[in-house]
Image (cartoon, rainbow, N blue to C red; front, side, top):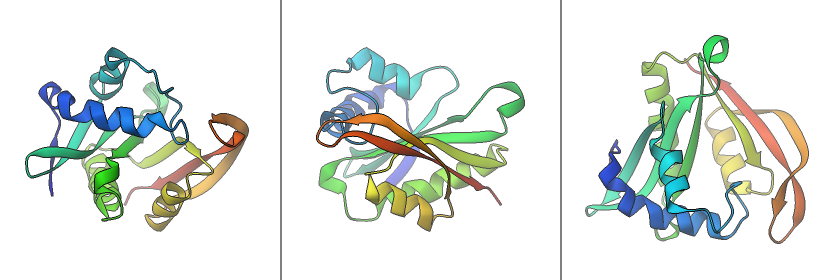
Length: 161
């Protein structure tokens, strides 16, 4: 796997992964009919630094790194991750997470916070906890899961060292 900074030309490989991940409406707030333009803005908008993981020249995963807030909250990072189903279960999410934490530290962030981890996304919760994140808050019934109805989301946080 090769991990590198994404450029807009990579979006043609990122878009199918985005569509696949959001199609279930079980882990991200995006609806299955989110437009390509909205997805592009999410990954390449102002202040966004995105990375792609490639295997054999094809994008298999991606993440974005941003400041969680502006100004006086700008020392805390935020990130989002997506892995293609065909690449799941091989530790790529962990590799992206570790890379992201290092990039955030190098960018001068002091902490990282995930504002909205869907509580039923057990794999993500387990991964982030294994990388030192703790659940610092629970947002009750804030996510409309396609199959389970209203479910909680977690706010997860860790300091960078």
